[in-house]
Image 1 (tube, rainbow, N blue to C red):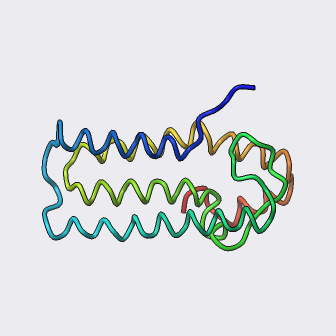
Image 2 (spheres, one colour; image 1 turned 30 degrees about the vertical axis):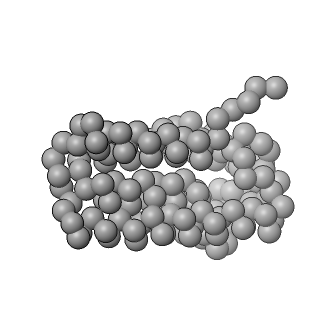
Length: 148
């Protein structure tokens, strides 16, 4: 069995890379004190939506792991806001950290991370959901956006 790297590991790596870039190659300081403290808001949102999505997975007894077969289509709560609230939460956390750091180069990591999650995880997961849930999935995709 091949052990695959899960999205939270990529989140941690992205955070470490953002902090390293901030200190090694900060680029322009774009958000000064005290405005950078507003980064706490997207971090709080990111943590909240991740916890809400995780609770929905447990409540519906389906897997949270992207490489495992889903057993339920969740369309309420955080999933009524975004088809991928956990990835949205991860990106919000990274945006918050970039704002807290206040320099330009960490922002590049946010964009790279979002594109990477979309290509490597979201598209595969959404194909699995389409195969598993058929018309219910299709109807859901017409009412709830991929990100927000």
